[in-house]
Length: 194
Image (cartoon, rainbow, N blue to C red; front, side, top):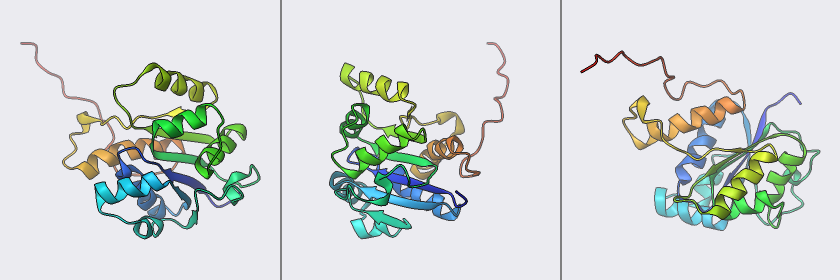
């Protein structure tokens, strides 16, 4: 595989900005993106960002309908670096944890796990119940990365976009994608004892 490709899914959890900004950053990095949008993901993007399906789809190189279980990304023969679900609903988390591939998001995530490719889930839910925690444990044991988008406030983000980019920089790092979309921690100043 010479060209770098990532699958990006946007599901119905709050935080559509994570998926849309990820697509924009990947495009500027020259990474080919394959997008899958759930209907709830479209609904949230509209409510949170004022974006319609077509607006989001324009950010991706290839778009796959969530119902197309015969899409190229549903096969292990589809060469890619992995998949990011941003944001990831607990419904999608549960589907991944239990191998329930009833739509293309669950199937593509299952393929990444079985092929030992990187799978990163930006799970958006709080507080967590035991079912969520057990599903996170199951995905982790299978080799997936559960990455709740917890803000790095020590970077002192000045906007929502900067806060989101702090998380996305770390996600890109997980795939070895060079980026400078957020500052890196350089160590803190020493504080005098009171």
